[in-house]
Image 1 (cartoon, rainbow, N blue to C red):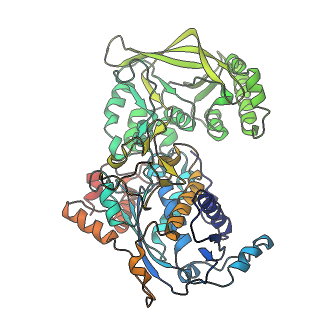
Image 2 (image 1 turned 180 degrees about the vertical axis):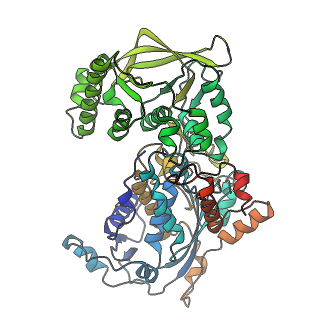
Image 3 (image 1 turned 90 degrees about the horizontal axis):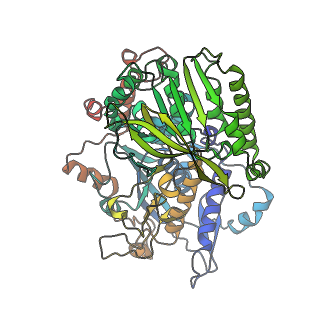
Length: 600
């Protein structure tokens, strides 16, 4: 996994706000015209403002705005960051940063129309970050490969979102929505609820033996296990049996060719000595040992259609040079079979440069593989195979409850450039396996209130939404379902599907924030009846109890809430020198929720 880490702290906020403004204006174009004509412009120096043909009201209202964000991974954290920066009162912003530079000349028209400095609503913003684990940051903690510390460093930027003095922001860990509190209850308590809990399931191959045989796991489960996620510690016992049950050489097949698949192969190959200074869980090192003898990463299509990036690919090519005793192999004939006329056209299309680089790198590796064949003294291998369609899993001869082999069929590519499909040819190849990891995509799971198909797209695994606002054509306030007002939004993978790198969540979060701002301006979140009093100067128009109400509810139900200060105790305990394997290990994660709560 990758991240554009430099995107988080930007002294010049103009690009950030302009991006939100673009999403805001896109939302506006979809709305029906009303009797009063509003023109929405974005004030690059302040917030979103509205201008009206009639005289603008001079009365200022201060609103208490309570926001609950479910999930503290990158999508949730970026949503909190940009929501805060977009709607905090101007005075609080000035305490945090210098005034932004003057706008370019093409913004002069906007500046002229905003020169009246009309009064607008300010918000007493409260953001509660709700997380089912006692620890925050989602896949940054439990999904990023342990040998990618530069990616995990974004945690320090996320820390600053919690510790900033300009926001009443609270971490509420060990609280699971759907178990400890329902979505409907959250909506009764908060003005705005944003779902950002990501993908909690996986796509399936749908072939015989997948659900029946032991030893077939999703890559999501395997990654969470070696990263010390408390919910997946239990699979270590099964993995230990599969990878340590005999003296026979072990062979693992990873199905899928994205970056997660390559991460799994690299971790399996490196073994204990290559990972001892990382934050990989110690229980994983005990099982992986010196590394797996052979790992095969295979996919249905060709190398140009693979979802991996050149960074992860290069890491496999460097394993031998870095002293991990691993040979990386690619077959020249499979590269040639994938080089169809349509593929060659793909390599000449606009934006194809990354694929051209991958093609060259793999051909260099294939040439080296042919040269060293039979003379290599390495003890471990990673093979990258193409044009192979998994067909069925067969049981182990000695233990029919376990997987023993995978039968694949050779495929060929057919179709137009960037739309080629893999067609089975009937030629079969069988791979003996000790373990199979399926890495063909994560999938979102709906909360009970979102289970109806008009609210959740089961094929894509996402909540149906329009620019992050949860939508449905049959919303009904009389059936314990969702109401037609604003207040419910979605961000991240649950919004768009499992795609992109960590930095992709930045633009996604801005889009969702723009929808929230639009609903705030159009009265789709607050009931403004009490705010229309002639003599009102400051009116708290929110009737939601927010944080106080949720704290009271969870206390009544006996839920132990892990706040930010308590999480810092967990964080400090994980970094205690006595827990670490080496001086360079960043932390030894606590893998039991109960053990974490005992620190309370």
